[in-house]
Length: 356
Image (cartoon, rainbow, N blue to C red; front, top):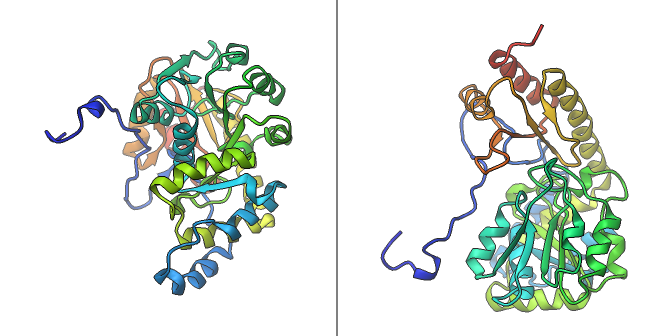
């Protein structure tokens, strides 16, 4: 870092994303992107928005908010859009945390949470997952702190029940509970906390267009919350980045979320491939957690997982390996197309020949 970098951020450890290699014939299963293209109408919607680029984007995201509200069965005033779900998290933490209001979250979860805390000078209250990587939500009851729960969790892929999350909301009435539902569309029906929105004023739900709506490169996320909480976060947004979602992204997101048939078709394909991949990994001696996401969390004692990761990388197959304690012998494998998974297994079998 330069000598001009502020001393208050000298110890900041930035978020580490999955590798973004640009090589021929790469099978990219390391960033939980959707393996299928955006909905057919997205390209035309983006092209139609190009003439309007001489003007600033709609800072209210009115049409996009209506489309999101229709999809989720809420009102537009319940919606706030951001430049990816990470910005939504930043807006929420800036609005509902400070030096006197810590953020509580799991020790193994989305690694952007501690980065945001460090950046915004928010104290962290880290609660360990159980030995089997499940989350004991009784530990979060009555904390009287802002709480963020990734559900399903990443990188573990596990889902917590809505009734247990409701108890967290009920016992922390004076603090915000953020439920990060990035992967909820891959979970069984009834897994979202959305029905709790009418009952609890302290609930914020974050979502993204990167996974089920195939727009990771467009950088679009959104929050669902009571109108007064949306107003709080908008106050933060208008204080630093009022035009935070550009016109092309607004057009792409509106077209993508309005194509319900394509959404259901693509999600169904991912779920079918997830089930097939889980079965094949277990048949090869891997322990695979029961996933409610578009990725698998797996381990084996046949070879160190870091070695498997490296050998797959040499063969043009990217998955994710973490060096953090407790999960340094686990792999996170994004679900790709059947053809991509076929290449993954061919490479894996080359590294770990099938057992007799």
